[in-house]
Image (cartoon, rainbow, N blue to C red; front, side, top):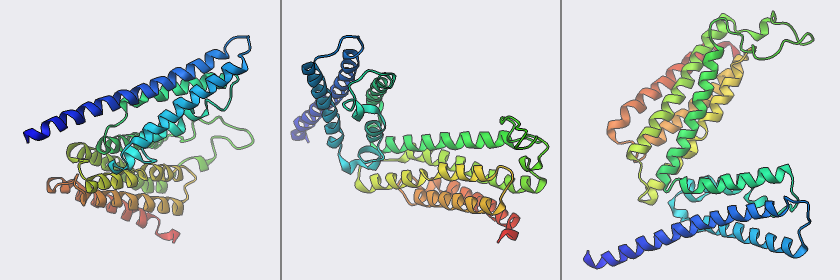
Length: 310
């Protein structure tokens, strides 16, 4: 064991050097974006030679950033080094790759430069392993589902007009149009839909909790299991949104039933994948069973309410 100590120290030193190099890479990129914008902020034209130098410097900085991304160990998981990783999204969704496309100062260019600054500033706080990355994904999904649930709860307040924020239009109709309100039958159906949405929130909250408490990224199997959880959990919020949209009047019961079935299927997959993974020890299986039952209960009620649509 003592013989390995120098190797551990060397590994730690190399990791520290790499971390500094990576951090400096993004700082340089931010600085080059600033230089590019400042060069065209005055009335005087920049010489062709200076334009060429600026372009080459920005290009070198962007290539260095791409190199850092390709340094990431692919075996550490899709959420760390794949196309689902936060760093990949920073590279693709930010204007990092657009800075060399135009050398004319404009409002768009200034916004683009600010986008580069923001992207570079995100890098130091990105997740360091797949467990943290998956937890970040789950937390983001949970936030979206919470917002959708709160919006629908507000709209369903007794007597609430779900379109009250839309201005009345003389040609399209007045507020007396009953198509913009829910009937009593609609509200009974939507009560079970809300139960399904609440189960979605509870599911994400519990899965996030066990990933934080028990999630590990020490082996390929553990990393793959975390990726599987993140992949299927990413389907929850779009499914919740689709269900919520179909719940607004005039209610199409068949559309509600189909969207509810899709959400229920996604939730049961999330629960099953979580249950069979390392993040769910026997002590955590109780809530998995409870939420599976809650999903089935609400889905069965929705089927009963919409039986006549088949």
